[in-house]
Image (tube, rainbow, N blue to C red; front, side):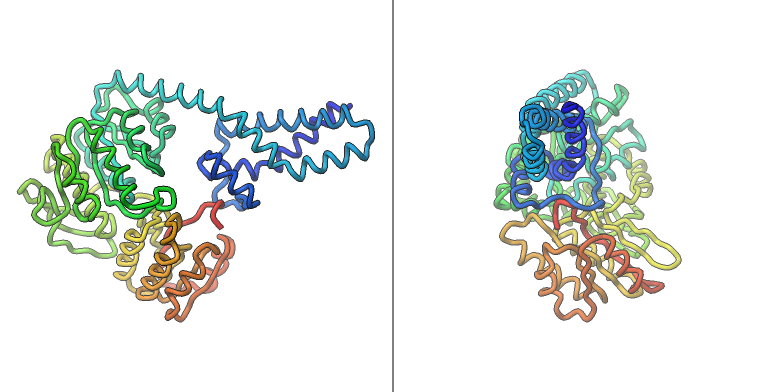
Length: 467
């Protein structure tokens, strides 16, 4: 009978433990980060970012169940009195996060073996492929540039690209093993990084032929420590690129790395460089501009919003041109480039216009989104929790964000607690400021304040592990 009791108790506790497991997933399976969260009893409540039932989560849940089952089996088998069993079982339930931590530790060697095997298979497949590999990194603009480059290159070539914002070893390996075909001419991959050495590892995994550096800023400053460390990490792509690298020159850090790089390279976006845009005419529907590319001029039209996206187009078009695509194919690809979901994506209805920039999380991107918002008619509403992972600069940057919002918006809806005070300080001159601690409150609030003809900018969106 005690086996049945142990099974039932373990099952119930494992259900409760899902909140710890979700926290682990949202912390990118980093044990140190999860330990800090659990030590503070700061758990991932809410449904904003649901638990993804991956194979890894299934393995972790199974190990956690076995751990709890063994613990409860010992309780019911070796403690003779009911009151003893009850007290100890209650303590185990109350302190179940320690069983979860033990499960994390037990799972790590298994996950590392699986990860290494996955990487080995991806490397083996890549070594047999004839396609050229194009890698993109930077602090922001990576995903947008990747999607634009894909839309341009596919006009004349067979192309594979990592989907959405996949930029980690497992995401890249998954794409290689499931999507990359022998007939593909180019494989476009995005590289993300949170610490030194991340880009070097990814570049060696993929064996990069061509590189693109998008603008560099203070994203993930909390883990990198300084912008210089971020620059050095992004430069790891340049060191590994076998052929040439294209640099977005409208950024101080990328210009610095361009001057540092001594092999084949191209500076773009700045007037007079290898490629740049001029005669830009922007509206709420997109932009028209002339693309100067290697002293050739091309008339272009795009549905993408904002000056930053024009720079992303210039970078992507430059790479496509250098890889042999025709000017006709480039212009057609720019025209057909699709708005990237959650990155200044316009969603228009008869009642209201929404600008979904919820995947943006940096100051430059925030400024760009506000610039686009200012070009619309009607009341302007900004919904944002501000920016995180800025270390000691976080309060100062978010106060600046609040000030910028106050210059453009009529209404500011501050989300979450994290940056609330700094945003309020910056936006103190704005007449209408509201606060919502979660998405449910946000929706209720917007239903009350939105009027026909309003334009609503959703800027950045925190997962459940940031309050």
